[in-house]
Image (cartoon, rainbow, N blue to C red; front, side, top):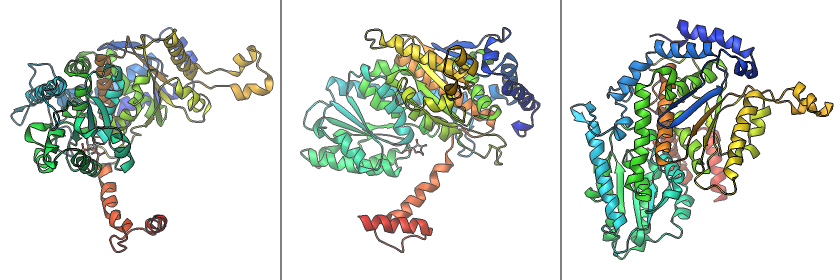
Length: 535
Ligand code: F6P
């Protein structure tokens, strides 16, 4: 297939977009022939009734997906084809949570069996730690777990641990990611080496930040334990690089592996999730994976017009490429999901922040939007002004749960009312006529008009459980993949983050005073000298 923008399906949607741009959301919403705008799957509900999508546009998007061979690409991913073409790797985060008895064979190896065996080892270790059978070198029971990792080796575990915070019955989870020594200092402050278990989470076991922090924390253990030889009792590695983990001093039985067919930003269901399992226990972690599996099965089986990841992915393409909206806000009206936007930033922008297609030529579409967000209602007191009256439209995902885990005096109903109110005003706005009819002073009307036409998807579920969280994670994972298929890009490599690491490595000796260490641009040299003058 050539460029997606050369297809008749794309041209049809461009025509439809011209019509939609001339039609306000108010009229689209009022269209009796619009058809269904809610779909359900894996315990979640996706409501696109506030999206600028008519029945014609939806049909066009589904036709575009068919023309792009979406169904075939989904099958290719789930069956272990090497769809990560530039790294020649399969993409099998779905194998991490596949039902027992499923088999996905890559190079003669059953990936599902591998994942199940590792998860069983994780569970055995977790049970030993939480029962006290596995203790620190002084005999003290572990009370805290520190996960050292960055990117996908941090953001997923942090987000899930925070989302399930009131279900932490095991070790208290802590996370170090930034090479800024303040991160380790503040995280370790108040922790006792004798009762702290340290996980070094790194797919490659080479990431500079993670290895620097691993050395720093290992020294913290050495300084705080009776003998340096005891450190091994407190160290665990989560990695594909078993040899490097052993070289670091991690005991072989404390290395929990995963494989190159698990992308970092898709890895929370792998050994990378061990900090979560140690915090919430094996059963709750299994519930998380059950939710992911439910969404996987829905993604595979549901007709495209009722398929939540397909619909969400196509809405993403529609808003980005046809309505020309370059940014997307994720607004969880659930405080426990306060780290969800940060997690989704890596998932979506490291996956689809690309400008070259699978064919190696520049894309002819706009790809990933800038994703950001904060929980509601806090965002309403921060950036919602821009959403409602800024010069640039923002596409929003509003996430709500019918029941709170901690309702006090009906506050949860007020939270829900705010979520629905924001979604309504984003879509419909408030016209000058409505303002005048409401008696607003004439000289203020212009200042109070809200254009609306800010597209919003409402995602809902009964309550934030581990299962619902798993389904939500998988929904975004697969929607990201759908977008990548339509855009014709590889969503699973990340070449753009490599060069910056090389430049940083070359700059360290310069900052240490070795002026000949590297040939750098004048502005960098000037900054190095200014910073050194202040040290
Ligand atoms: O940001 C680049 C990246 O490779 C991510 O894709 C990955 O999640 C992160 O760095 C950490 O990599 P590792 O788990 O190998 O330390």
